Length: 187
Image: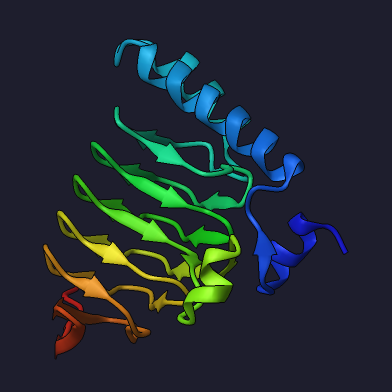
């Protein structure tokens, strides 16, 4: 089994494997090219994002400062918006539904490291997928950790650290992030 296959399967893998290094270099180059484009060059930005990301809807906006590990493991739905300085460590799949809005300085981190230092120091790591449902709003400076699912219709308050799954249609805040109230839909 290749290191890429181990990574996607959630097993311990060597992140310094040449194949993975080459993939990260490609993504870093595309992120750099993206940052060199003017905000007015919307068509070129969208084309570059479609080349970088695994799958996208037709309408997406990702502002300057976007960084990712691989890009190919990121799926975004229709009408996706990520504000400045979004970081997605996509060692495992990261899936965003339709109409997801992400405020500035947010991070989505699928990568994790073993707790025991000999294994950690050997260079092995693991990854767990992140899933964000439809119609989710994520406030500024939010951190989403490996293995988390955020349910459709949820709102994550600014500065939150999401370490556990968040159910649909709730406002959730804090460190650790927890639901604080249900969201009532208005006609």
